[in-house]
Image (cartoon, rainbow, N blue to C red; front, side, top):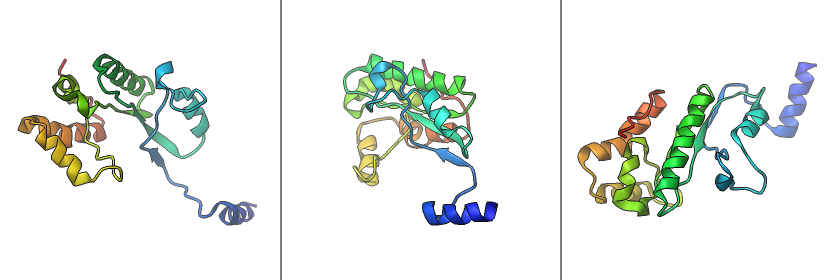
Length: 160
């Protein structure tokens, strides 16, 4: 029976992957203002959808809005709390808006670099970070260290 099901699945769905999956790009709705599609999409809804599948972890991304640093910090805090409350299922991906300039530095210990490829060229995005005038230590944090800590499962170096 399994062979028949697998054959039908291959014909209908294509090859079947049976290993673990990490979803590195989700936007769980952490508050009503973070709803980005028509239907509400709280973290619990995502977990219910993938329950029983091979998805073992998922990123929880937040989108920073220009000029609202208080909202940015609150959303970054919410993503960090979600990661803790989900017992490691969700891993946090905090953000700042590049146009917030020096005021965004208050979040620097929780920011990882992202080029937004193919929207932006990766080398242009790196150059933009370098040209913002960060110290060598700040550049290292943004371009490498914060992401390395995240991938190693370590908490952010929250400088508050």
